[in-house]
Image 1 (cartoon, rainbow, N blue to C red):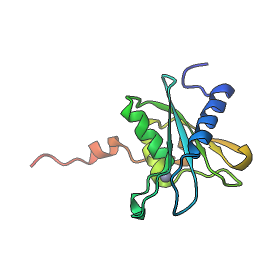
Image 2: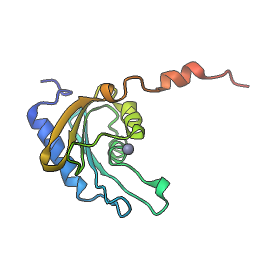
Image 3: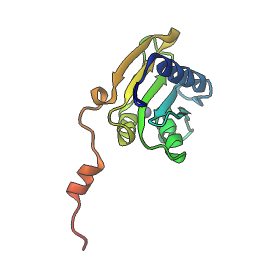
Length: 145
Ligand SMILES: [Zn+2]
């Protein structure tokens, strides 16, 4: 299988990493703990959890935290993400996270994990079919003044 493929073992690993980092979520306000793990094309895995703040607007979601960890390590080509919540039916990433995930992996596989290990698999394209990209920015740029 190619490096961007998500076979069962890789999927299980990604899910386990998301579940492990979910334990570190800092969510005193919502008490909604989320863990995320992203896999880069070269096979590395980066994790993130949600980090809330007394200034609520500064809260960082788990998926975005994982993307930032990947980029900080030089990984910009992401092929899969696992997101773990305690919801009965697996939770989906918020709109902001979908947009940030799209920046580094429009074609990525998305594994959603809920309570008791309930899983759903989808794609970022299904969750965000028509993302805003830097191609849009370039098309909309004005000439320098
Ligand atoms: Zn989010």
